[in-house]
Image 1 (spheres, rainbow, N blue to C red):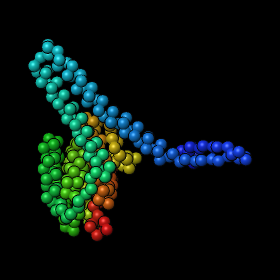
Image 2 (image 1 turned 135 degrees about the vertical axis):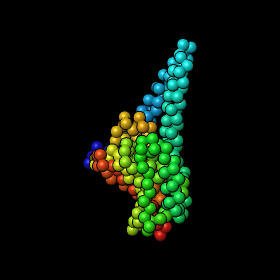
Image 3 (image 1 turned 180 degrees about the vertical axis):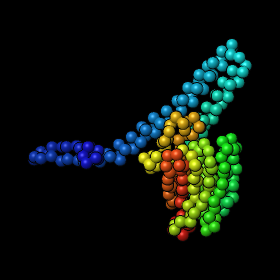
Image 4 (image 1 turned 135 degrees about the horizontal axis):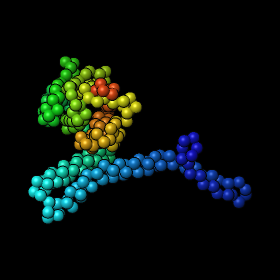
Length: 261
């Protein structure tokens, strides 16, 4: 290590004296290897728990003396954890497709009111079960956004789902604001909030502010990473703001068509 960089040094002596040194900067290679190791470890960790649960209940069900009521409960737990693993795999495939360049956004003008209505309708049942109010605040000067329709729905869907899962009381608001480069769309809530030291990392894959709580609520740890990649593919950026106990606001900037040129 030299100055924080990883170097490989090879020396060859010369017949007439002296030597030739060859230096190879391996910093990026080592960093990528570390990312790959962390990724494999994280995926293994995320899948281990549901796999253990599925295996344990399946083994129990194989016994002939399990009461019918217990069999039903075990089967439901197996189904829940199978669905959880499917969500993780689906999110991983989405990330892989985006990061590899296999997906390219096809942006166009989209009315935010229509998309917001569909997204909130999909979250209404979960919000109602917790007594949460769902609202929209579409600014008069930001009624539409230049974005890929499918990507926009996935971005807002992930943000609303995340907000509902981490809000015990109050409301979740889907909003838009005009920005000098385009339109900011986002979601704010009255949930548990996020401490400052976590704000810059919540868009990393598998990063969780409260790992145990997030898993219990069904999160995969990949939703916000997908949001970041989708928005950045449009030339935009994402930001998070919040305080513990005072809710969270996450915004995504979608540049106007002229700003992308």
